[in-house]
Image (cartoon, one colour):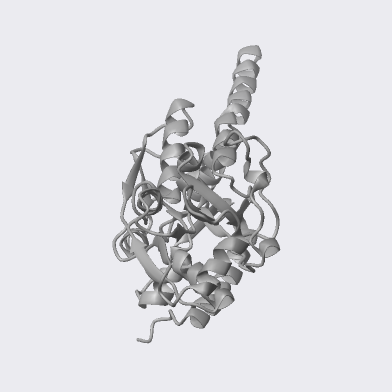
Length: 331
C-alpha cells in the first residue's frame, strides 16, 4: 500500500509540474517576413529580434528574416495571407499594412492575418543635410513657401505610402508642391540625403540615427504631439528630447506608425500565445531598452482585443488620409 501510495503521489506531482498539453513550440525555423526593403525600420527591428532571440536562447528554433518588399509590401502580405495555418511564419508590419491595399486594390486586408502584438509605435522626423542652411522647421517651411512648386525634393520610402502621405500634409501647410522621390527603403532614403541628392526626408529616427550621430544629417522636428522621451545625448549637444515637435514650430503634422507582428490566418490560440509570450520576453531584455532609445520609439504595447480595436481605428484613419491625398485606388 505504501508503494502504491508513493507512486500515486509521484504521478500527481509530475502531472502538476508538466507543461500543459495544449502548449505549442516551433519544430522548425521561424520565417520572419519583412514586407519592406533592407536597412529600413521594419528590417532593422526584425533583425534585432532575430539576434537577441538567438543570443538569449528565447526560441528553440532559429528565426530567419526574409525581405519581401515587392508591390509596396504586397508580396510579403500576400505570402503570409496564403500560408494558412503555418505557425512557423510571422510578419512585421508598418503602415503599408493599411496603405498598400488602399492604394493598389491588392486583395489583402489586415483582417486576413492573425494579429499577435504591437511591439511599439515609430515616429517620423523631418531631416535635412547637416550642411543645409535650414536650422529650424520655420526656416525650412519659409524656404519651401518662397520657392516655385516642385523645387524641393522630398525623399521617401515607396509611392503612396506613409512618407508620401506626410509629404502631402506638409505641402498643404506650405501651399506649395514638392517633388516626391520614391526610394526602395529607409536606409536608401537616408543615404540619398547624406549625398545631397534630395533636400529633405521624413525618415524614422532609427533609419537616420547613425548619420545624425556622425554629423551628416540634422533633425528639424518630430511629427508627434509631444517631444520624444529620451534625454541621453545622441550628438555632443543634442538628444532626441531636444528635437521640437513639428506642431510647435508651425508645421501641424502628427503621424505615428505601427511596428507590430502578425501570423497567417488559421493558426491556433496556443500558437498565437507562443509569440505573444516570446515578444514579452524580448521586451524584458536590457537590449530592447537600448534599441528603443536608439530608435526613439514610442513604447506602446498591445495584444488581443485592444490591438484589434486599434487596428480598425487606424485603418479608417489611413483611409481618410489617403482619400485627402488622392491616393485611394479607383479600381
